[in-house]
Every structure is written in structure tokens, then in C-alpha cells.
Length: 222
Ligand code: CDP
Image 1 (spheres, rainbow, N blue to C red):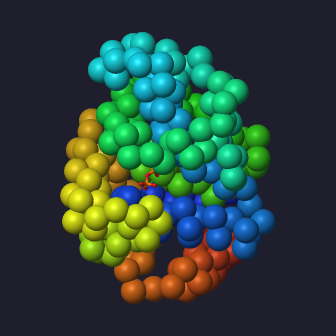
Image 2: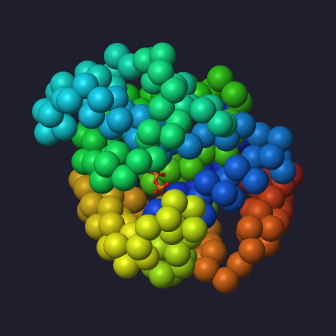
Image 3: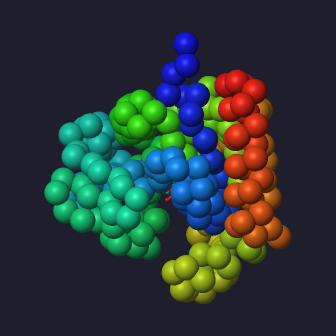
């Protein structure tokens, strides 16, 4: 049976590898929906911080994730009725998100919501850290985006400002935490296409992924 996973393009990779830019552009090109799963973990982190909760209290934070009313759209992130679009990108949320994302209760709930989202939309372009490995292991196309640490830090500085050395150190720390956690760490799956975006334009990468996706669809390779 062809399930919603058949039409999922899973895009994983570390911070600053170009996931959001490429995933959004690809979704527009293919007329598919787009989901930023990092924004979901960021929103839960933001809400926990807003309520001054202890992020080490695993059960309480997992319960918050289960109970929250969360909408992650193309342009806006709404949690429990308030717009957190800008707030979830602030440095204090970025500094704490990996801890919240390592909470298995939070991950379980986010995974369920991501799978429900794909069922509702008949698939989509979905970006994150564990999309190929855990959330959609049957995705028709799995992509692991990388770029050199210097380029990734430079991109973040261009987006958000700041000192390049400090940003590079913060990214390195978060990537280490994300790739060494026990529950669904950041990793390539053995059938992912690895794309280094360091010296390639967005257009080139989107073209390559579009061609791959269309060829797999036409060959029924799911
Ligand atoms: O935009 P950036 O690459 O900096 O990060 P993000 O995609 O917004 O993700 C923020 C954090 O959420 C990551 O550092 C991970 O800790 C977590 N995350 C995750 O654990 N699993 C996902 N599928 C997506 C994000």
C-alpha cells in the first residue's frame, strides 16, 4: 500500500547546512507542503522557558509537549495561542533547545504530530535531524545536507548577526549534543543522499533534488 511516507522528502543535517532554505525552495518547486520540525522543538522550549519550568524535569516538560496547542506554518509559529515566530529564534531558546529535544517524552509527542501532519497533507518536504532515520524511514527521498563548519557559522552570522567565532562554537556544541544523544540522534541514514552545500548554489541543489525525486516517483521507487 502506498502510505503518506511515499510522498515525504526527508531533509536532515546540522545547523546552518542550508536545510530550511533548500527545503522551502524545493517544496515551492514541487508544489508540496513544508514542515520545519526544528521550529516544533524550539516552540516547546520557548513555552517551557516562558513558564519558568525546570528543563531537567523530564516528565513535566514532556507533559507540556503533549498538552500544547502548536501550529507550525510556513511563516508563523503559534503555541498556546501566542505568536512565537520571532521568539523561538532568540539566543536563549537556541541555547536550550537541544536539552529539551533530548527528552524522549517530547520526541515521542513531536514524532506523532509530524507523522499526523504528513498523513493529513499526503506527504511533504520535512526538515530536521531524525526525519530520515526515525520519523519517516520509508521516505521516498532522504537527504543529508552538510557544509563546512566555517561556512555554516558564516551563514548564521549573515542571518542573525553576531561574532563568527562565538557562533561557530555554539553550533559545534549543539551539533555534538544533537549527534550524541541516545534518542534519535542527528545522523545520516544508510540510504541518504549526502549533499555538501559549501560551494553550491541553492538553485543547483534544488535542481538536483527535484530531478532525483521525480525520477524516483516515475520509477515507483518508494
Ligand atoms: O535552524 P537550526 O538548524 O539551527 O536548528 P533547528 O532546525 O531549528 O533545530 C533546533 C534544534 O531542535 C536542534 O539543534 C535539535 O536539538 C532539535 N531538533 C531535533 O532534535 N530533531 C528534529 N527533527 C529537529 C530539530
